[in-house]
Length: 144
Image (cartoon, rainbow, N blue to C red; front, side):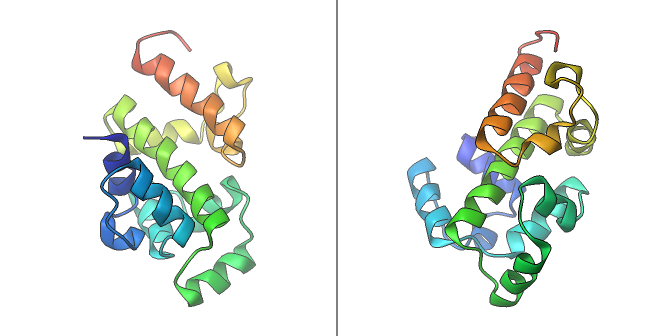
């Protein structure tokens, strides 16, 4: 399964994304076009993390998200933030082989991240890369 397929899985599949991306480049196009708002509900269901916590994690205003819920579509910037969150969730699922454990890991302070909870770093791409780096080290058995 490709990384794009794994991300789509945690987002609820192609129907939730709003298109049928077959690869990373097509997924970029889907993000630019705007993801369906329902991807957030799917991520919340998958992770057990409430939508408002996801919004806070990626720096999206709850009021704006309420408007998007009514419109049923996110804009490109919002879609990118949700896709970034989904990318980390999908990687965590792979590393821990259990979505519940992966979600719990996101919510716990992490020594390799200076005692910061991984979910608190997902508001920036650089923060997400740091979280991804720790997950990759765990994946390869490097103490983190």
